[in-house]
Length: 452
Image 1 (cartoon, one colour):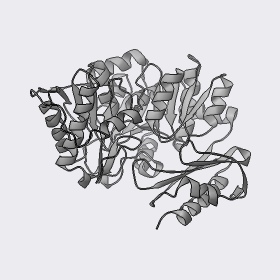
Image 2 (cartoon, helix red, strand yellow):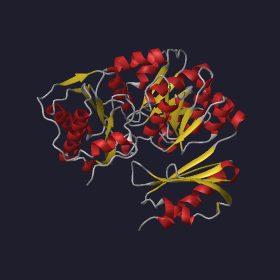
Image 3 (spheres, rainbow, N blue to C red):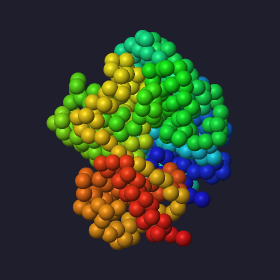
Image 4 (cartoon, rainbow, N blue to C red):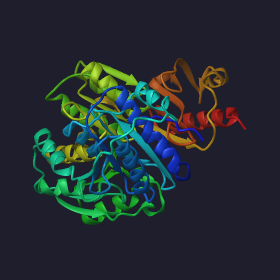
């Protein structure tokens, strides 16, 4: 079984993470850092999955034996806080043990370089090229336990200094790494916070810790039962965010992205980076502010690279991963929870969404995941007729998978998941019925062309 890096690190079923494979990867990272002459300790963080402590222990032992000092957070920790600590402590990088939003039977390891941004393909390739090599040898270095949270909170206080007095929030930790952290930060700013699913449960209640509408029904119910102003959820490693309001329920991440970008653009105008799977309503907001849109493949490493290249104000993806200028070039569900709460404290998020839809049109998007092997892009393009769901195909785009631009500014995107053995089918159109029809047509194509 090979160790491969997808859109966000090496991710696989738990039984793939044998001690030998984990130690092989640890040696490859140590060798890469030595070859690049990167100094400083390596942080080894983890999410709350049952298998994470043993994997983190193996990585720490290998790095220590290679002569690299190791810093271990006192408990399971959000990925963005580990990433911030890399920068704050002038570390060589970090190894984060997490499968993020994937089901409990998965785990993963991601490498975070010294700048705190996701590792580029060039970096992960350099690491995988070293798999199986001996790696550097000692003398054995120390393994130190640290508390990374105070420094991160001080950073947020400088970046987002506003208060939340009088705001009622329900926070859904989804049993993940954000528990006792995101909710505590919101409380420190003056909000009244009720936490649900705030205990450590390595099974995440028997479901994927992914803040999708079907998984957030308990949060919607609690927000409405308490008459709270809003609900906020993080995924398993707290790098994603989702928001609930009493009237709308779970807010579309596309609209949330548009509302935050519009608000940030009032104070600092500039480009925005979005993934190929994200709504073009972002483009409409950017056009209104005279700003450029940079479209990139799915995966925050592409967002991070484009943000640096274009000095972007904000970057994000449809799955709820966002960051802003002045912060890490890494998606951060903890920071975004605070930012969204501050925006809601100034003006209700429903009103902000109403303004977006009034000014730029109503967004209808959809996503369907199909458990199958991915057909090749060339076969998909060959099989596509001149129309999809009765809409003329106007142009094609292979930035990531196959994207078909259809008449009426609609589109269909088909791409393999970078973290699970699934194919994702996305669509956007002027109304919900057309979105469903486009996704049905895309799903039928996938099933017809997927390898047996």
